[in-house]
Image 1 (tube, rainbow, N blue to C red):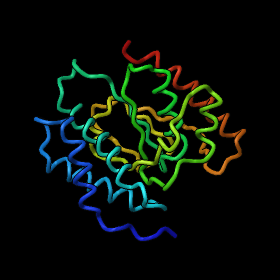
Image 2 (image 1 turned 30 degrees about the horizontal axis):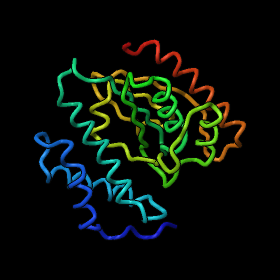
Image 3 (image 1 turned 90 degrees about the horizontal axis):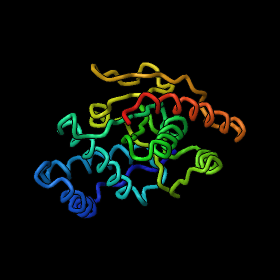
Image 4 (image 1 turned 90 degrees about the vertical axis):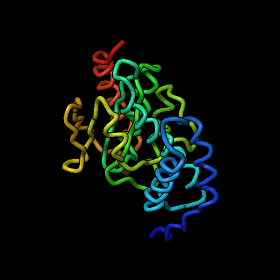
Length: 211
């Protein structure tokens, strides 16, 4: 059982908001940035097993949420397409898919992933099978993220992967459902097969994305 989430570290959150605010100066008020950061912290703390780096992760999640909000507000012709992968835990399938697409798309799209019920950590074999495929993964870079309204509203394509009725439905978006096996607790050979299944689907997806 995880420890109780710590109280909001106000001084550290304020420092994080101060780092984020200049990137969106003139678009979002400082209060908006700090409010999103505090909300991100609370969401991550709800499932965290270790709280040492929560403020850092909350800052990264908030940066993604702010970028998504900015995307929604920008003119349609001036922005990259955004692809959002959603699964239940954001610990396996959606992490694999997002990393593989980001690697292979080479800057053509903005990629996000999230979970309807995120867990504390990414599945242990995920980084290993990505490395085998030649995809460099930042140590400690990937972490399960909660699904938020901002990233859903910003997505041009939403790809669901086993989250059932909890998956988001937003009018006007392109939706795909990839019935991919769940790597949770699977041996590494099965995780390799799941990686290859996802990679084949990404090959098809890339042909339909803007060049």
